[in-house]
Length: 81
Image (tube, rainbow, N blue to C red; front, top):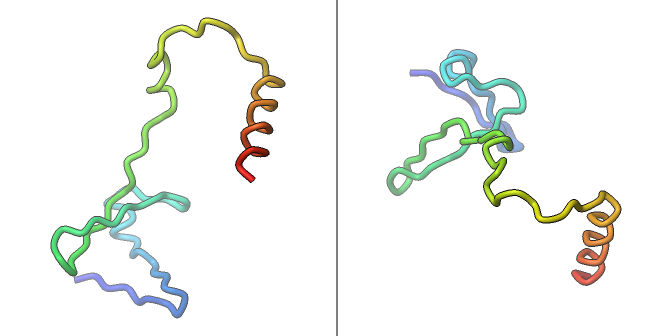
């Protein structure tokens, strides 16, 4: 059995054998899933490349400039305050 120690800040170091087996590198995200009360498993977070979304909504009817995007974001941010 492989063990790890929790630091005072609630952090653990995942042992190298486990990182290699799961293909985890620095910066990798992991998910914790409760499989039964009081028992959790962790696994690499499912990530999909943004290119998978290409064409999802069909071809755009008009081109939007960066300036127009900035304007809309600024207006929404101002109304959220």
